[in-house]
Amino acid sequence: RLLGLIPEVLVQVLWAHLLCGWAFGSELTFELPDNAKQCFYEDITIGTKCTLEFQVVTGGHYDVDCRLEDADGTVLYKEMKKQYDSFTFTAAKNGTYKFCFSNEFSTFTHKTVYFDFQVGEDPPLFPNENRVTALTQMESACVSIHEALKSVIDYQTHFRLREAQGRSRAEDLNTRVAFWSIGEAFILLVVSVSQVVLLRSFFSDRKTTTTRVGS
Amino acid sequence: LHSCVFKNVSSISKTEKKCFIEEIPDETMVIGKYRTQLWDKQTGSFLPATPGLGMHVEIKDPDTKIILSRQYGSDGRFTFTSHTPGEHQICLHSNSTKMALFAGGKLRVHLDIQVGEHTNNYPEIAAKDKLTELQLRARQLLDQVEQIQKEQNYQRYREERFRMTSESTNQRVLWWSIAQTVILIITGIWQMKHLKSFFEAKKLV
Image (cartoon, rainbow over all chains, first blue to last red; front, side, top):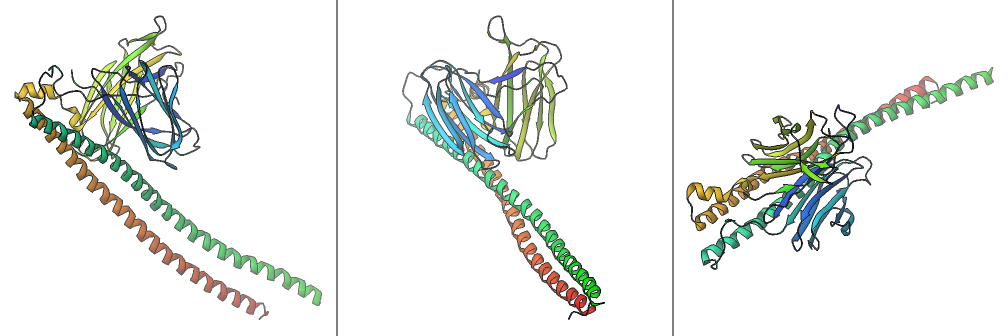
C-alpha cells in the first residue's frame, strides 16, 4: 500500500539479509495486515544448518501461512494456518533463500508474527584466534554455561510470546464484555418498552372496532 | 568486525513504512544498522545505493511517544536505550529526494537490529579492558545472566498487568450480571403494572 505523497514512482524495496562472516541468527516481530504477504530473503552458503521458527503473537485465530523456498524456487517447507512451528534444514544450494508469511486468507484481522531464523553457529568470541589447543576445563565449563543460558533466553522469549498472546486475549475479552453488557442492557430496555407500546396499540384498535360494532 | 545479525524485510513500495516490534525490558540498549542497495538493470544485480537515497527512522516507545525520528543516508546506524519496558516500534521508510528510483526499480535494504547483550562487542571489550579469554567468557556469561534477570523483571510487570486486566473483567462481568438482572426484574414489574393500569382504564379487566 502506498502511504506517501510521491505517486509516480513505485519501487520495490527488498529488504534482505546479509551473510556476514561465520553465521548469524535473527529474530524479528512484525505486523502482517489482512490480505497481505510478507517475504524475507536470505543469502545462505551450501552446507549450512539453518532453523526457521515462527509464532503468531496476536490476531484472529493466531494462525498464518508460511512458505520457505530455496534459491531455485523449490519449496522446502509449506504449511497453512499454523500457529507455531520450527523447521530445521541444511542448505543444499548456494543462493538467496526466501521465506514468506501470508495472511491472505483473513479478511479483517491483522496479525503480529514473530520469527527466528538461525543460520549456522554463533560466531566465536575471538574471531581472529586460531584454536590450536583443546579447551581447558574452565573454558569448556564456560561454554556449556553459555549454551545453557542461550537456551534459557530462548525459552524466555517463547514464554514472553505466549504471555503476550494470553494478555491480548484477556484485554479483548475485557473490552468485549463492556460493550456487550452496555449493548444488552440497552436492547433489553428498548424491547420491553416497545412490547408495551405494541400491546397498547393492539387494544386501542380493537376498542374502536368494538365501539363501532356496538352502535 | 563484530557479529552481524541481519534481518529481512520484504518488498514494499517506496514511500511505505515498514515497522518492526521489539518487546524489551527497560534499560536495554538497541543498536540498529542498515545498508541500502539499488537494483541496477544493466548489470542485473544490486549495487550500493547512490547518495540521496535516504531512510527515515522513527522509533516509538510503548506509550507511542516518539523517542527517535531522524533522516539517515543510504547507510545508517541508530541507537537507543529503552526507559520504559514494553513494545517499542522501529519504523523505517525510504525518503528519496532525487529521482534515483525509477518505476519498477528495486531497493534492497539490509537491516541489522541487535538487542541487549548482543550489542556488546566482545573483542573490543577484551582489548579495552585487557581481559584474558577466561575473564572475557565470564564477562559474557554475566551479561547474559543480566539480560535474563531484566527479562524476568519485565515478566513480573507484565503478569501484573495481565492479572489487573483479568480482575477488571471479572468485576465487570459480576456487576453487569447483577445490573442486568435488576433491570430485567424492574422492567418486568413496570410492564405488568403499566399494562394492568392500562387494561383497568380500558375497562377490560
